[in-house]
Image 1: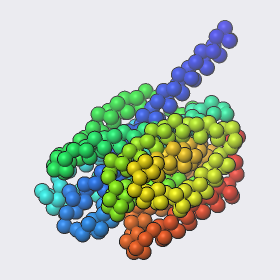
Image 2: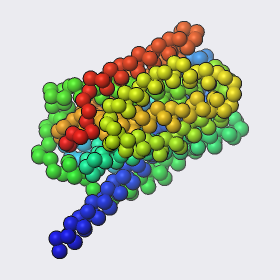
Image 3: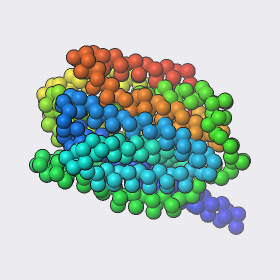
Image 4: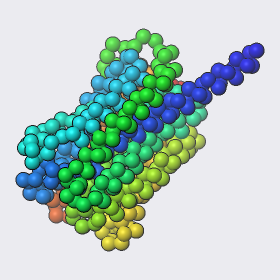
Length: 432
């Protein structure tokens, strides 16, 4: 009888973990689909739809600036949802973030343009982009934390990375949707087709919310003592070093994608005259392979440790961007151009995101502050890394007349992240 009960408990745990994994994967995929639609469509049409009176260079910077607003909102959303995630639980917070993201994305698809609403159309776009970032600030921390706290011993890296692989699935879905509408005649794209990917969000979010309400709360959270009144204050008092390590690592973790994909799309299309389809194909290839590579890197970190893979990823990212990415992009060869965009998704990002999904939460030994602590470091690091990367790169390109300052900027960001990994302790075997 005892053996049967134990076997039933193991089966129940396995079934519960599968549901949590599915929920986190789908939720992350949907939220990143919603969040990245702007990043992919904005360089193509939003300057014409919302800023037609601006100089082309200025309008490109403004469009990328609004893209960065989503990252300005992420720390606020991370702190807000982190507070309640540590106090009332991971599950209700994650359902809320998914609904908020879906509503704001659908609303973008319903926006009037400058032609019918003037500058107020851009103001509304700015506000909705802020809400997208606010929602993602909670989701991007909550999903890996829930997966980590639900994972079996010795497999935390693998299980946590499943949630993060959903990020790439969302980018793939966004790339396919944008590629489909971008292939239409420009008159159709500007008149109505650009709205379709945003409006599809309401269907996807409905599915995601249904699945998310079926999962159980994190077993680690259920077993904790009474929640702290203000978890963030405890983080600032006792966990400053872990939060600073997360912040520094997040600079490059987010920066490599947004430099090569978002700025890469803008630079490749506007400066080099590369067909958008070629660039988007590179994004698609890299992110399709990343869906599998992220869990692989997470599982590898369970064997060799987090720091080795993460430190190597920051070094390789700096070398790739400074010496290979732009020469490949400027080659004029379709295959090399697509490869330039794809390589970060195939290797660099999985090495980073597949590991940080477990590394960041493991730095915080007290589960009562884990959500808040990771949110504080990651979201502020992301805004100063990936969030402003495209607009800073575009500004440096315009100011310097070349790529030199862009490359120096990225190299400095990568060096800071590498230094953080060097001073951190290994977390693979830490109890949570």
